[in-house]
Amino acid sequence: MRKSVVGRIAILVAMLFFLGGVSEVLARKVEDIFAGKVLLLKKRPPSYFKSKGGFVGYLRSNSVKTVHADRENIWKFETMAFFRRPLGDYEVEMVFYDIKSGKSDSQRRFVDSYTQYTQDRNTRILSGKANLTRPSFDANKRYMIVVQSHGRDLAKGFFNTKGVTQASLDQQKRVEHTMKEMEKSMADLQKKVKEQEEAEAKKNAEKDKAASDDLF
Image (cartoon, rainbow, N blue to C red):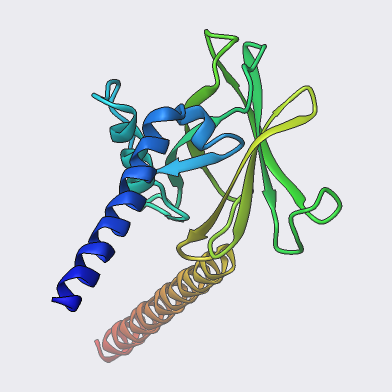
């Protein structure tokens, strides 16, 4: 009987925590839950959700921390930035930093940036799409994406890249170039040998003809 009562209490406590989490999601706006963050998503979110909880659940289940290069060695992903207050502008800068040495302003190394626009200057959510290409970006690196407006950091996100490194691709190109040069040298050598054999055969034929003419 005691075990049954303890079990029921444990279930009730768990339900209270669960309901508390749900009520928090329902009470707070999505912008407040993810304020100051940039999420990287596997795919573009639907344009409509039945509830805030559905939107939050989608974001949490589809956000990624690691991005894999595609067949063209490009890193593609969706972004969704959340601001603590209305943007107050029609454009922002999406800035990427290499944070191998650290995340602070003095440690992070600028990599690349692009301008992203919005039609709603009072928005607190900004979605977009990123295509990261070489040589600015490389595989097996850790980056930080920062949404900036007039030099101010509004939201940040972090991610890792996976794929074949630029050093490996360069090495592969060097090997392929060396193989092509070797094949060309071999073809030239074979051509010269053939030309020498043909010249020798022609010379021998002329000698045989001259010897035959002397006999008659």
